[in-house]
Image 1 (cartoon, helix red, strand yellow):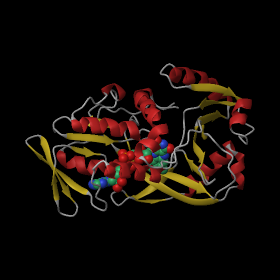
Image 2: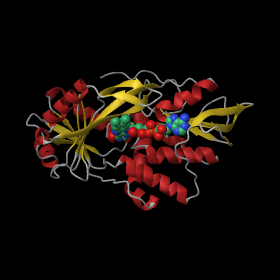
Image 3: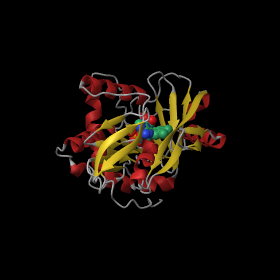
Image 4: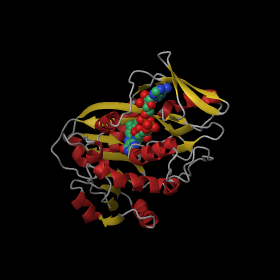
Length: 326
Ligand SMILES: Cc1cc2nc3c(=O)[nH]c(=O)nc-3n(C[C@H](O)[C@H](O)[C@H](O)COP(=O)(O)OP(=O)(O)OC[C@H]3O[C@@H](n4cnc5c(N)ncnc54)[C@H](O)[C@@H]3O)c2cc1C
């Protein structure tokens, strides 16, 4: 729920594929469809919720308004201040690292070669066409097609080719508690507050919501966790879900992520260079989109029907304008 209308088709297509991914990949993504609940803990947010629901339902997202008692039934322990919420039964969660391994292993079985510990240093372009990837080990891999999907570091490969994508890097913080008894099925968010709260398979609570860490060295992927962010994130999580008062914080970390001005990904071919495709700028919500994005990129690379209906507003060459703030 809550996806921008421009990426909704891509999100729904991904969601259609997630439940079957373990079978398809012959691996374990840890995917669990426990639903999602975004709660309102003040009247202002609650008044705005019906319009938010109607707009998404019109595009086929099965969100529904739930009153305070229904919200409490879905998430026992929710704050007494909760006045209601929006529930989406098809929302879910998966484990990031096992999912990456599941995709990588499936790709290997299908003949892909994955080289770890080696990066792409540069792309070679001749007569307007990408012809090779120069590797950090000094090697050169000739190619007909190259896909730049280097996350926060995509600009380092594209800049030297004169392609200036509007990417800005932010470090997003996550907190993890010690394992606690299982109590929370849905992913919990909150209107007007930075919160994404889920309970993992081992009982640990994972807390995010866009809280920033400080970037120390962008190229080297180094960041510093800010105490104010840790405190702010914990305060919101505990205010929305008071049982967290009893949970002990076990770990904090951050991930570097590329944001676009409109906070929507840049996808597809780049004009002026044949054979070059980009998938970058996922702006903090690209994990859920991965199954459909991968499919689109594979189709583009192979010259097959690229399902442009799914990403017509996300083209890499579009003008990305600042997202209006509510
Ligand atoms: C803390 C945090 C929480 C998040 N929570 C969610 C969530 O709940 N739901 C959701 O949908 N999304 C979430 N996201 C966003 C999601 O993780 C990203 O949008 C997604 O991982 C982006 O995928 P990507 O492949 O574009 O980039 P990345 O995942 O950053 O992967 C890029 C890869 O390219 C590699 N690379 C970089 N440069 C080179 C090079 N020159 N040569 C070779 N390889 C290179 C990097 O090492 C990296 O492995 C979260 C992100 C963060 C940081």
